[in-house]
Amino acid sequence: MTSKEWILDEESELRLEIDFDTKVKLRLVTGTAEIFGTELGQNIDYEFSGRKIAVFTWHGCKLQIQGTCSVEYIANETPMISYLNTHLALEQRRVMTSQNNGQGPRVLIVGPNDVGKTSLSKLLLSYALKQSRQPIYVDLDCSEGSITMPGCLTATPLTEMIDVEEGFGSSATSAPTAGSAVMPLAYYYGFPSPKDNLKLYNLLVSRLAQTVDRRLEEDEAARKSGIIIDTNGLIDATGYQVIAHCIKAFSVDVIVALGHERLYSDMVRLHQKSGIAVVKLAKSGGVVERDSAFRRQTQNQKIREYFYGTPKSELAPYSTMINYHDVDILRVGEGSLAPSSALPIGEDRKVSETHVVKVEPGEHLLHSVLAVSNADKMAEPEILETNLAGFIYVSEVHEVRKKMTVLSPCPGRIPKKFWWQGSLKWAED
Ligand SMILES: Nc1ncnc2c1ncn2[C@@H]1O[C@H](COP(=O)(O)OP(=O)(O)OP(=O)(O)O)[C@@H](O)[C@H]1O
Image 1 (tube, rainbow, N blue to C red):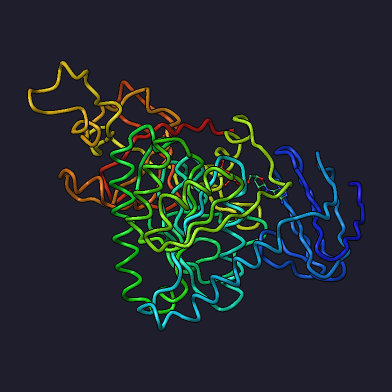
Image 2: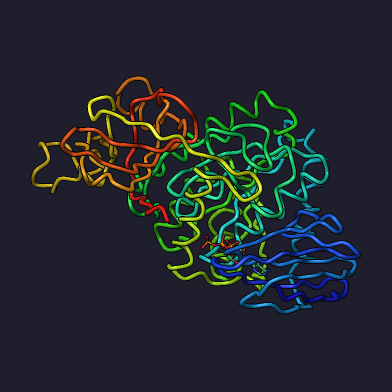
């Protein structure tokens, strides 16, 4: 394995892109360094595969890289000072919470795709954690699923530093995630973009916000620390509606507009008069555009980790045979969208967007990832607003015997019978 040393001056970063089929080891030899806000320990090997990262140093350091990266270079110009200043301003608001009902900042990060919204969220959360805060991370980017699986909207109270190698996670709704001692709260949306079913998306955002509020009422440390909300990259007219809805639902008081001048000035025009602080931050030159193939591979990696764990903490999934009639497979909206002319008189399309339909099990479920609802009965709309117990993967379908084999991270019978089908499939390799 090739080995290379890099010397970094203060306030510079080493940018690395590592393919999915290679492994690269990173070691901090001297000095201090961090990855998206989480500090590296000296003389520890960190291993990465299929990642694009920046190793930043405030005071200078020496790094050792073993293995081959597809891209590696040092950048001296970064927006890190402005990111740190944003953290300091948020921290100031936390200190001043006594003047604001004990409520810390509620920050919404908006911007187009691939400007570094998730990376900035990690950084602001890590810096808050470093100051013994316990912020809540709300992930509304349904295409990515930083915390659980793509297709989910989640809220995670963070109590421990975010893992350098795994980011937000070797995460699972069935287990506490990296960076958290508490289980994340997840609702199932099931589509890659809020546009796919706007009514359902907004409904779930409102539901998530209510649950977060209830938690904040009980948890003083989290209340003071505030919430950081990561969004998806939609910034057209629908995107603005989605943003306005999030602001209302979560009572956002700080908007960070990342890497987009017009979005910033629109946010000032639309929201500043209601007392919301709007901050403009520049995109880092290191943020990498990810094509659809890379995003798909990242999703696959995420799904694989849910069932099999990571090299650091491997899991062995359990395989169970299920009768078709033991479970109800559900779908919302899309599958049930009838042409307007076919809807009963007086019922408009909006009604069917949140209508739940049962799906006949069959070959079409093969390789699907299904979300297991915590609901015990099929009542609308409550079932839509019930959080998730976890996920299963359909590894085999036995059409003749009316059975299917599913993988689950937990042993034994799967206790819940309502399983959501979204657009997520995964061919195990
Ligand atoms: N300074 C940097 N150097 C190298 N890579 C970076 C840097 N900042 C971010 N990245 C990488 O760039 C990619 C895109 O960043 P990120 O996911 O934060 O963007 P995003 O705006 O949240 O994207 P989207 O909304 O499209 O999901 C990620 O793989 C991230 O790890």
